Structures are given as C-alpha cells and as structure tokens.
Image (cartoon, rainbow, N blue to C red; front, side, top):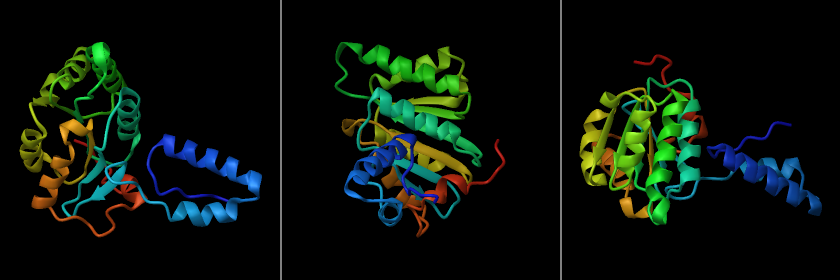
Length: 208
C-alpha cells in the first residue's frame, strides 16, 4: 500500500516512518496510518505551501531557522521540479553565538553548490555572509540582493515574483520573514487549495 503524506520535506517523511514503526508495537498498521497521515496539516509557518492565483507558489517556513533546517529546505527548493524560477529569501539565523558568521557561510556555499537556485535574497545581519559565501561559491552576484529588514524585502518581492516562481521564506523568529507573505497576500489573491501537497509539483515546466 502506498501512503501519502501532505507535508513537505524528507524530515517529515522520516518522522512519519518513525511514528509508524513505534505505533506498530501497539498494533497500529498501515490502514490506520493512511487515515491519519492524510489528515495531517503543516503547523503555522512550518512548511506551509501557499499557491497564488497569479501562478506562483510560496513555501512559508518562517517560524524559525537553523543551519540544518535552512540547508534542508533550500535543498528541497532546488530539487522541486516544474518551476521557472526557484527563489530563496533567507533571513538571518539568530542565537548562533561566535560561530554565526561561519555557519551562515556554510549554508551559502551549500546553496550555491546545488546549482539549482535561480535567485538568492538575504535579510538582515549575518544573512549577508550567507549571500557572499554563495556568490564566492559560484552563484551569480547579479541574481542576489541583500535587505536590511523583512519589510524592505517584502516591498521588493511583491513586484519581483512572477507566474511559475517557487519562493522559499526561511528565517529566525526575530527576522519576521512572514511579513513577506503578508505583503504578497495584500497584493495577490491566494488559491483556495493553498496547502495542497501537489502544489510543489504543479508549476509550469519552462524556466528562464
């Protein structure tokens, strides 16, 4: 039997498999899992897939961020087929201590190494190191931009997004990356099936 999971990311697949394995000790099987898994929905600002009437899609994972989580979501963005432009808007990761600069740089290098991210936007503080490291690792500088705040990024992205785009919003709570989604909501209408898992597979096939 094939089990569907309406949540994005390999980490959610692994969590679901671990839960199923644990539940099997008490006799819970795939039939029960099929019903439960199908009813799952992403938590607020944690892997929400939002589709807009204008033909672009947003992955809203703006609740918090860490080096592992950022790299995982950027990897998902790069691996998702069927979109013209894959765009990451990465806010600063806070509370990383003395390693903050290097950890941001590691994530930037990893993003560039994918060779699948079309535009990289960075928001606030050490996110500049994320951006500069991506450029140093080969991402075109002309396809990057730094913003001092999420409000500045929101004003830009409202005009920048186009049909066929897939935009990832990721950042620590203090960067308030959800403001970008709020600005998009104010300017573009959402589709009613905004959290449908197939949203990540339904974009146009061409890329610019």
